[in-house]
Amino acid sequence: MNIEIQIPDDAVRTMLATTKRLQGTISLANAREGNFHPHRRNAHPKDPDRTEIMLRCGKAVATKEKLHLTLNVDREFVEFPVLTLQDDLREAGEFFEEYDD
Image (tube, rainbow, N blue to C red; front, side, top):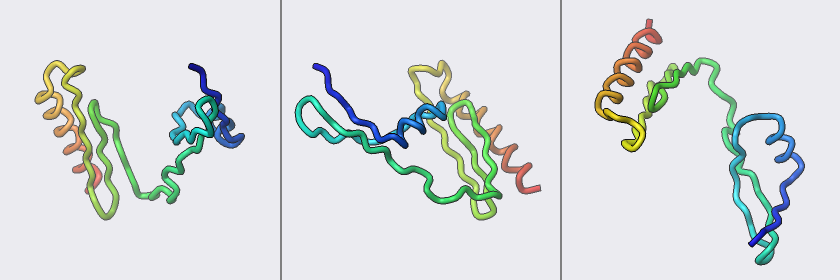
């Protein structure tokens, strides 16, 4: 089955101008037609004092107010999950120590 989706012009321009994915929802008008509605993400301005690094399985973020660490290990793709977590934690710890200096 084929479904025709209408995408707003500004969403098409965004998709062509960037390599990032455009997330949204599709509302069906009927069984063969629908409309795409992009989600608005990160509407607030980014904190200029925010510093972040990408880790093998996550991200470490430091701001004036808080330190934030996100790790997500997919056991299917990582041979030694615990060692991967330990390495990422060590790297994040070093990053946070440098940020506080």
